[in-house]
Amino acid sequence: MRVISLLKRLHADERGAEGLEKLLIVAAIVLPLLGLLIVFRDAIKGWVTSVWGEATTAAGNQGPSYFDPSTVPAPTSGGGGG
Image 1: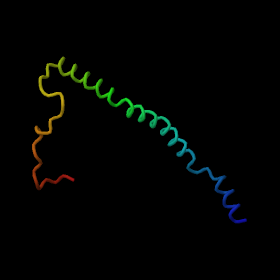
Image 2 (image 1 turned 135 degrees about the vertical axis):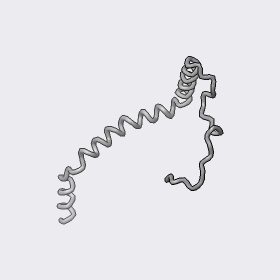
Image 3 (image 1 turned 90 degrees about the horizontal axis):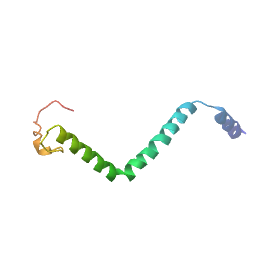
Image 4 (image 1 turned 180 degrees about the vertical axis):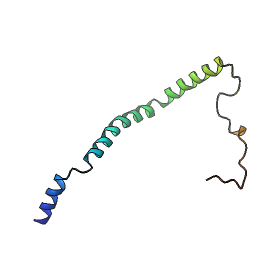
């Protein structure tokens, strides 16, 4: 009998239901978008690269259109980062 009364009280308790509902709504929106990004990643990459190239050409930037790690100076030791 104790188990049945515990299950009845647990079923009647609605604390946290609103937060769970919000989480499910966000997941229902985000997961399909993530799936689309994964499926169409090559097409999106091509489009972004094309637009980026057009923008840098229009701006007159003749430098590389990508991030070149060799242009970043090496970190010095003894810094106070982290």
